[in-house]
Image (cartoon, rainbow, N blue to C red):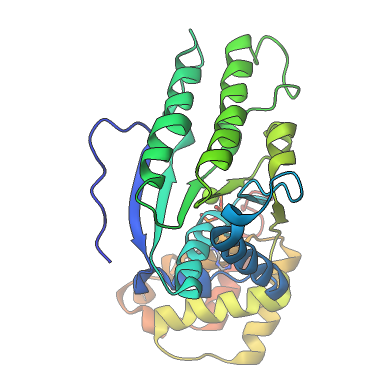
Length: 295
Ligand SMILES: Nc1ncnc2c1ncn2[C@@H]1O[C@H](COP(=O)(O)OP(=O)(O)OP(=O)(O)O)[C@@H](O)[C@H]1O
Ligand SMILES: [Mg+2]
């Protein structure tokens, strides 16, 4: 599917793309989270994109908002994009994917942030929604946008931040009311920093955690296969997976560990297809003391 050119002068838009795109399938398939969690996300998005317009908002207050919350490197951003692609396949019709950069509204002074946030929700998104496609809007790292009004002191959380957060809440409500074809997928690795009223609007909150041993095993095998083009000793991969969970590696760190093994030896850098599970195990051992513990 062709990437859509973003019209000039639209603030905070990172990407506008029509899905499905076969190149995006990996963002769903290769992110390993518990199967029931993937099923819930998939079912929710299909339901929301397909039926929200028909439902009475008092009887079933569907806001069209799902939140993926969890520590860094657990796959939230990738999964959010993969989910939109999956939904386009499930619906059997194109889905418009809109990626918003919450960090594009940094100036919380003089009401500037409040105004640009209002513009995003009252003009930009409704304009995009008028293309009449089921639309998924990614609010990545939403803690930057819907800052908790109770979470910080008045000094670090001045009145303009409150107003910007109010504008986000009003904006989400506005889109929920006027654009039933839009569903938001928000991510955060700092749920405590997200405003309570924003969290309360979510139809579904999925907590994405560190991968367990079985998930790590699949991720390691996947990264090693990518690098070497072959399957490696399954028992050794399973044992290494257990060591990775003991070391509390997040999923991103697990994949980086395979890279680290390559960085340890020039011959592997020259020919990475020679990488073995033993090399990755050695990389874990050498990095164990140096890796920052994940939070
Ligand atoms: N659950 C997972 N399964 C497989 N690979 C993963 C998983 N989580 C992360 N990865 C790997 O790490 C990469 C980065 O993940 P991603 O950026 O989606 O994480 P994130 O949760 O959004 O992190 P952050 O909170 O730092 O933004 C992915 O592209 C993938 O290679
Ligand atoms: Mg992310």
